[in-house]
Image 1 (cartoon, rainbow, N blue to C red):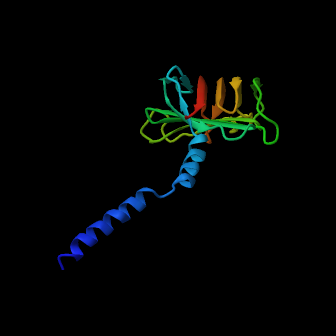
Image 2 (image 1 turned 30 degrees about the vertical axis):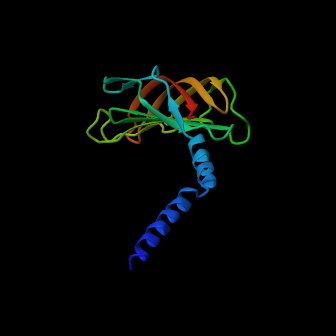
Image 3 (image 1 turned 30 degrees about the horizontal axis):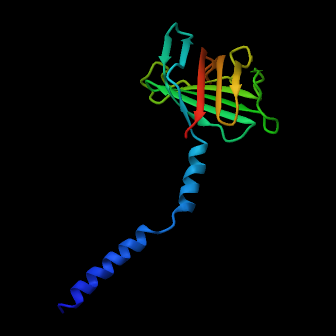
Length: 179
């Protein structure tokens, strides 16, 4: 019995050493691939929102996330104080360029609230919704600089809710891949 305890102790340490030497290179590559599609933001971004009822909202340095995984698409999500702004550019087969995108098939903006208690209430505003006259909202995204590692630009638009309420929005964004 006395000889078995030290033998079990040595065997346990040997197993721990083997587990510690396990090759995790596949797991690290998977983690790097997942992280490469995330983006982080700079602090000098802003968003200004003007609602139909006269409310004015300014968000300085909202938290920003997004996706730069494909050369033909860009998505940026910003949120602060329970308000969420989603920008989406998609050219499907042609790469994005440093230019202005104002075609509603290429560029979209969505403005919503996490809680119904916020300044937007239950309304969700989208650039592709229509107003009372059947006119679709307007969107303009200006890509100032865009590559596989970063994207920077400005945006503005007139958005409508399903209830035909109007919101105007403008701001800027700067994203880069996490290292």
